[in-house]
Image (cartoon, rainbow, N blue to C red; front, side, top):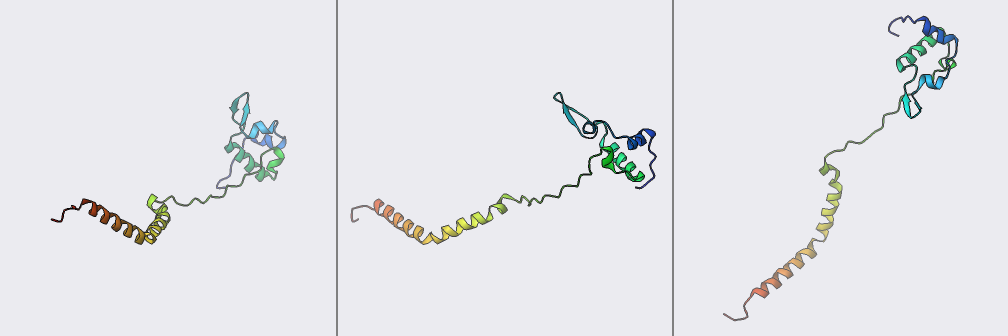
Length: 125
């Protein structure tokens, strides 16, 4: 702690007697379809925890919930640009098209030759 805290007599009273209805005291509750705030805010819960530690009392003995551990950071890969995300798919598509290219070229030449033959005149001059 950065500084010495002075706690009120009201706070010290909570060390000697257990808190009634601990569920309502330390966490929000749904009562009659409405959310009720806890009797002790998180700041006051932290003060109670510090007061317990200063006086050698276990925080769980007066009804404080155990201190929750911080959640681990979830790794999420960067989104990147659309072209970067689709790079491999596009590369595979181009490779497949290149392998089939000789057939496409020969078909194209045949078709253009047939079209040219259709436009030719039957007359010799």
